[in-house]
Amino acid sequence: MGMCYFVTIVRRELGELFQHYLLSQGLQTQWALPCEGTAQQRTLDLLGIEKTGKVMLSAVTAASKAQRLLKGVVREMRIDVPGNGIAFTIPLRSVGGTSSLQYLTAGQDSEETEVISMEENRFSLIIVIANKGHTDPVMDAAREAGAKGGTIVHAKGTGEKLNATFFGMSIASEQELIYIVTRQESERTIMRSILDKAGPRQGHISAVFSLPVRDVVGLRSLTEEA
Image (cartoon, rainbow, N blue to C red; front, side, top):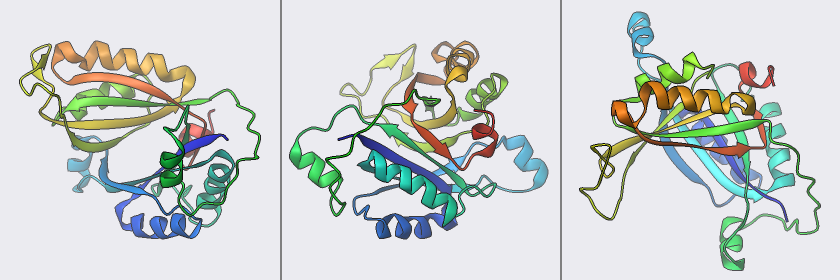
């Protein structure tokens, strides 16, 4: 059975509406994380506004249901209206046992008989682990390489050795995860720009990696060019 990790990132005031919508579609097991946009601070200061609060909702579901959810958040929730948000799916390689699958898909209809034809992934999710307060130089480097924007999730490292360092930077300190969805052909260019201009040697990030994204809705500047 093909499974996907379904992710939607929307304005915080829309979070509860989207959460209820996903519940109505059978996604009882969800995770919600507060996050914020990556608009440049100098632009926000010029306009006299603050960074946009967002919420990230995610769940595991069958690939066919994920396709229907992507259509639903466009048709029913209007996620494609500029500024509302973005939704995308990441194909799962495996799930650790029947009990894990039952927990992740509680309340969902069984679709074990579906046949999934894996398509070539057109998009990628770049995840940057950055030091707290260092997101601006990372996003500047990403934008120079063609990134349209990103989402910041606040986090804290939990390394076994609290004093461990990576290029002199504590990996157990407060950190920020930056999520950047991009076209696959731009992935390496963006990651190289981040490493060269805002990498570990500059003291801005600890690591950067990417995941394949199967489908994306809600970010017209990205999907229209793909």
